[in-house]
Length: 169
Image (cartoon, rainbow, N blue to C red; front, top):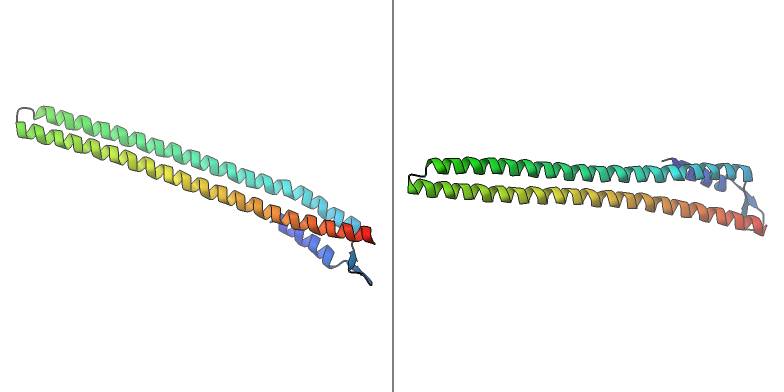
């Protein structure tokens, strides 16, 4: 990552700085440190934008997953309705025979129950999948922001330490 390279460069400047005799202080080249800080300022918004773009992409994936799940549920309902209509037509055709009518009604009810259960199962699976994607995307975004915050805090502390050391000299 670009931030890691910049932080490594800043650490290198600090590690290679001239030590001040008799005190635990260092002297760094102001121009060199300023150049690295400018790079850091430019890179941080880019990293935040990348994290934001990733979060937006994951939101789109979740929205698309829900849309697809709704489409699947609609298809299942349509197929169920079609099967119910077929069962009813079959039942009407067999109306003359009482046992056959009872069997057709039971079959139609079974198809309706199966379709309803399929509808519930598909919606639950789609919701669980969308929730899983949402949790994973939120965790990833949180991890990226935590990483950025930790590195920025370390860099800020190093800059403060050096500024304090410079002021103390």
